[in-house]
Image (tube, rainbow, N blue to C red; front, side, top):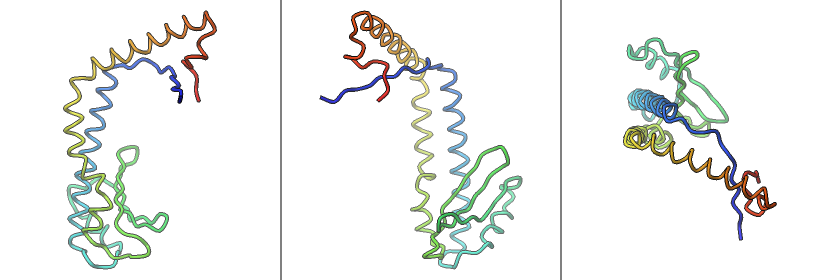
Length: 167
């Protein structure tokens, strides 16, 4: 029979969780905004060899004013990176070294994770109303585990239940 190890975590603070959710939603919206910009430029260059002129087109976009736009190669992949110092960072895979042709369909496929952010945000927004109750229940469960462990420790049973031990 497989055993389950339970470790104690610090209590969950509902307000901190809600703040993190809000930050995630903003980050997702930025990523979605950036990927749409990348798709628009890639569509213009569709079927052509990748060049730094793609970056020039993005840099000319007034909505990207104040953002750094870089063409980057990492591990045989070409990326477009958009970022602010000390702020949000975004990276889109454009093509591979083995096939340095920009193709909109492939760029969309490579970066599907960014296009899913709209539905992620809907789910995050939909779950916000549950956070306070879930945090309260989580914290109660942790306290109950601590009580069980304390009670089991008095009888040398904590190792039997493997509570509070790491694998």
